[in-house]
Length: 136
Image (cartoon, rainbow, N blue to C red; front, side, top):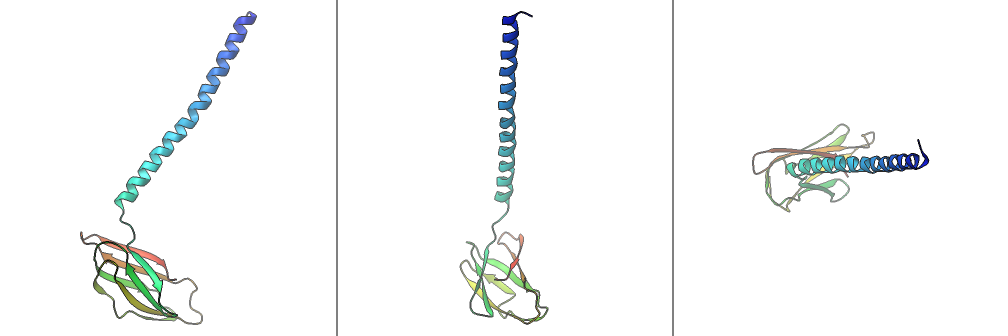
């Protein structure tokens, strides 16, 4: 192979190599875009958690409806092993937007450090909802 032909082949190979290298990020970018679109679609289908739990005093907590719709058949469940639990406002027929209900939870010595509370309710469209979180 003559010298000019050799240089042309080398330059063409390098050029092709750079094109292949430049092509791979676009594949990753396309996959990332597809993944983000799938995630956005899934989140759009899911309704946001409509609750916020706050501390009123040492043993009193409040459950607030942060949604824009009344939620029906609201119940709370807390692991009561080694503790005192009282929920006079539950089950609630409905909790209006921005409204809150109080409950009492007193930890005793030897109770678990992580206390989970589960809130279940029915959306206005009849769909069941459930949310589990740590008690603050």
